[in-house]
Amino acid sequence: MAMRDYLDGANASTPIALVTCASRMDVLSQRLAQSPCLQKGGWLWSTYFNCTSAADAFNAALATMPASGWLIWAHQDVYLPEGWEIQFQQALGAAQKRWPTLAVVGVYGVQGAGNKTVRAGHVLDRGQLLKEPAALPCLVDSLDELLLAVRVNTGLRMDPAMGFDFYATDLVLQAQEAGFCAAVVDAFCEHWSDTPARGAMPRQLIERVKTNGRAFESKWAHRFPIQTPCFGIAQCGDVAAFVDAIAVEQP
Image (cartoon, rainbow, N blue to C red; front, side, top):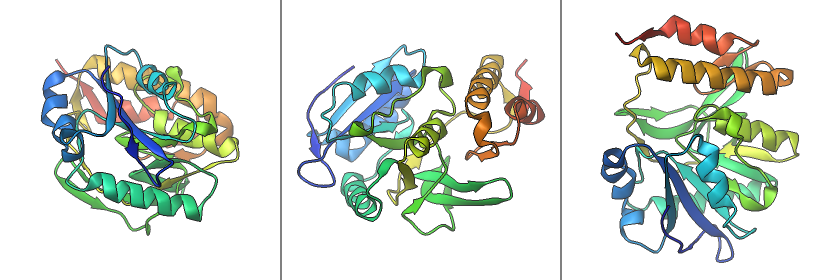
């Protein structure tokens, strides 16, 4: 891991830091590390390698944060454009004033579940601009993992059982059951994932998503139906069935 130097957040008493979990140094150096707010210095950001789950990195970084802070999680393949830190601070501050129980924020998510869902967010995903219909900021019931932030003093932690999938929506559901809320804010960023959305996929990826999906379904069956940005889940087994329907194991 690396670095400790706090950036003032929504106000002068709100430290904000960023953490990522890296599996490929080339992707990290070409994407997240090129973000102007990280290039300039003065921002606390930590990188963890060889993690067995997103929780390994996030929870370790969270343990070093002051209680008044917010910790941002970003994928290694995310790029934060010029001025992003200012936009995020302003958006976070406005959302906190609107919803004092705010505990988790992200840049892309979904309101509702089942047949009543509305997507929310403003991101560039693999070259495609996604500007969803929900007015921002807005409360949501699930979040995408590409970028999110957690208020430290809520006691929320990532669940290692989620591995590298479903942990964002898991945090949202944890927050809701603890009496907090989650929101999407307008903090435009770019996501340059090379993970295929469908078609040929490595067997290891297919099995990973299925395994983590089973853990998520088992944990949150009492909250069905659940709509994540990628999956509609009405019963246990839906994640595996969906993956089987869209994915083909690479030869």
